[in-house]
Each structure stands twice: as structure tokens, then as C-alpha cells.
Amino acid sequence: MAGEQRTTLSAQWFRAIGVDELSEVGGGRGGTLAFGFPEESGDIEPEEIEVFLDRLSKLFREQEHDGGRFYAWFDEMAFQLRCSVVAGDAEPLPFAGAIQVWDSPSPVAQHVVRGLRRNAMSYEELVADMAEDEGQLPVFVVPLAGVMQTPVKPTVQV
Picture 1 (spheres, helix red, strand yellow):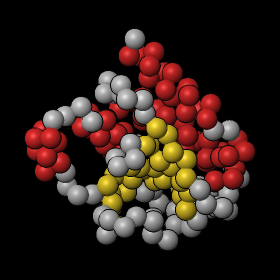
Picture 2: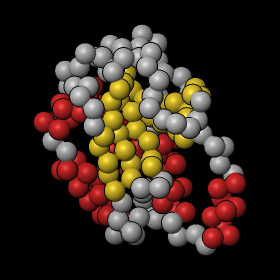
Picture 3: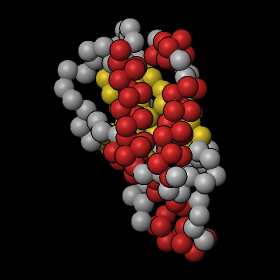
């Protein structure tokens, strides 16, 4: 049953976006794609999120771009997986706090699953779990259309 829910969730997300929206967001005109989670999301595995982000980033890379970067993160306050595009490779990503940039969706997927599981924790468990955070938001970043001649390495942006 859980596998069916995960497959359905990923399928719903892909149905929610189409080539027109990807072209619009990927074309550098701004915008963020946000993917919510049902209340009963505690059994989602990180691999489901990784596969989704890999497929979505591939869709963005296949669109025509003048360069830029696709990036994805989990917004715990909004309970959403979010994705967007920034033009160029020198421009910092638009985050106010410290982030850690990854060329793999795995750290973001782990963060999503951890955030979803926090939803079912008691206050005391939540405080203890949050104390273990390093205070850096993991962000999955993929270059578009030949931008960034070297691969993205895990880095911290403050």
C-alpha cells in the first residue's frame, strides 16, 4: 500500500506540471514549482524523492535554456518540496540563511523524509531532533545548458 501511495504521489506531481510550465520556469522568467505532501506522508522513502528530483532535473535540462541552474529544496515551514531556476552560475542562490549545495538529490531527499517524520513527533522529540541539525539547508543544484564547466561540489553558502 505504501508503494502505491508513493507512486501515486510522484505521478500526481508529474501530472501537475507540463512542458509549458517547465519552459516558462526554465526560461529564466522566475517562478517556483511547489509540491505538497498528504498528511499521511510519514512512510515516504528518500529514494522516491531522489527519483522524482532526478527526473524533474532531467526535464529541465532537456528544455532550451540560456544557461542557469535548476535547484530544489524542502521548505519545512510550508511542508513543500520546491524547485526553481536561477540564471547564470555566479549568482548566489536566493536563500537568506546558510545552505549546503549538492550535485545529488540524496541530501535533499533525506531532509524531506526527516521533515515529514518530524510532523508526527511530540514537542520534546522535535526539539531534540532539531538540535541535531547543522543549521544548513541542503539544496540540490544542476547546471543547465552547459553552464558550470566543473561539477557542483558540496559547498556552504552563507
